[in-house]
Amino acid sequence: MITINDYDFKGKKAIIRVDFNVPLDKLTSNVLDDKRIRAALPTIKYVLGNGGAVILMSHFGRPKNGPEQQYSLKNILPCISELLELTVQFASDCICDEAIRQSKSLQPGEVLVLENVRFYKEETEGSIEFAQKLSRLGDCFINDAFGAAHRAHASTTQIASFFPAAKMMGFLMKAEIENAHKVLTNGKKPFTAIIGGAKVSDKILIVENLLSIADHIIIGGGMAYTFIKALGGNIGNSICEVERIPTCLAIIEKAKLNGVEIHLPLDSVIADEFSPTAKVTNCLSNQIPDGWMGLDIGEKSCLEFQQVLSKSMTILWNGPMGVFELEPFSEGTKSIATAVASATNNGTFSLIGGGDSAAAILKFGFEDEVSYISTGGGALLEYFEGKELPGVIAIQN
Image (cartoon, rainbow, N blue to C red; front, top):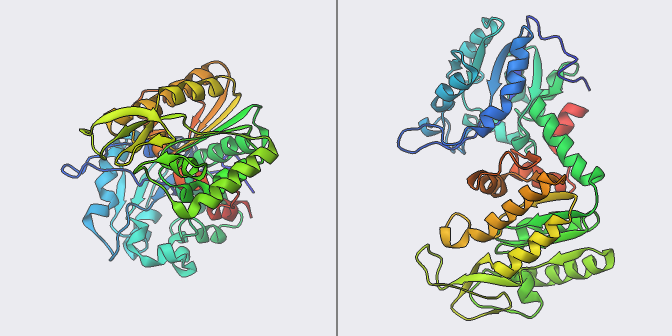
């Protein structure tokens, strides 16, 4: 496998698969969060700075019936142009003759953005014919879309086969894999994984895989209440997957056998309804009254989790501790973010696992005080579940 540093881009046109699936303001169509675009800039600028032209290819949203204006990549063209500080060209289709003409006429230093690849159903079907049409646009292929690396789609996986000697990872993809690999295989001990979110079913595989790697696993968010219920606690109206209770008990038992400490919230911030204006109080997590639900970890839990994190040398965080988007239930997640930042400042390596965890780190202002923030929620989750990522394998093979 060649690297981006090995390839001579002079006079070449590089197709770069990026993940520009960014949120837009519904009224103005302005980009609300440009971090995924900014994350791809080093790769784009490297190609341009070494005499190449760039053809950017991405999905955007989930269009169901072909082209839809709200999912057009034309909406984010101003943002891309501003960040690159140049006028970016746009192809109104990703495989038509006009797109081919535009790509062939690109000069070194110029950038062309293709229309949303998901306007074709062949993209998500992983069509080799569709991938072949995409491949006609350039001389080499760079995959820098880690956020879509777990999808075996035409533009993330199949297209690589048409560039056997000219396919490579971008700087973002390389950094994502290296940081994840560092935690999985070379992380210093003690290693603590913080796993949150609403449902056990969403995180079973990652928790099971971490049982052979981590020293401590902190479990928060809605999924914690299924574990607490499994241990005989009263959880009131808190979220609970009753069918996953045997799984929770098996995880607890395996953790004991492996010498892994499972940390569940001792207390919770509870409310009488899921609302920012609900009645709120604090109680032990295994003594939640009927009619009340746990929506955040409590003060005792925050203190215990902070102590564990302060002694950790490697931290992986995937999932919030509560409904941090609502102010009455944000303190638990904020306390974790604070503790992770503090540990990092003291020499701990911290990997923030994309999605809500990344959003929390940004919300509370700690983005510059952690080691690495992943751009790929689902992709990183599958990587830590022990799965191979099709978009990565396609480049490596």
